[in-house]
Image (cartoon, rainbow, N blue to C red; front, side, top):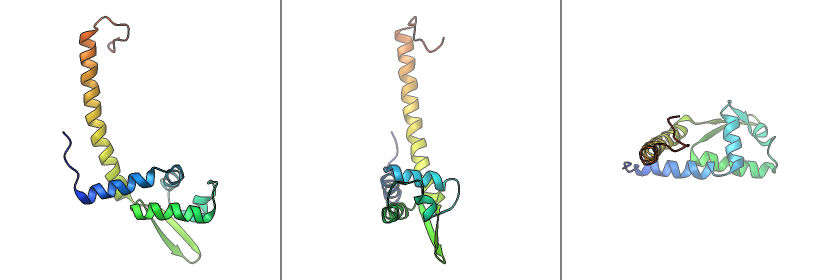
Length: 122
């Protein structure tokens, strides 16, 4: 059984998964994974208006995944590592549980069908 997630962490996960549920926001996060970028750099490959890009950035900032700062006329965005680590930890924890379950299922199937053509030991 997986331990209950503390409330603050659960809220962080909810905000992060909500932010990452949109393809445009995932594209922005993928771009920011390579390093900081200006809003115009983030908007360039997206087929949407600048106000729409800014709305998506607002969701990313409220989730805590992205931070931005304005210097002069340029707003530069960067990823925040803390919330990303929280998401990564949650995924790894659940992946491990499912992998163990699938391994047990594979063992049961191997025992039930030892001479099957789909046997994993071949």
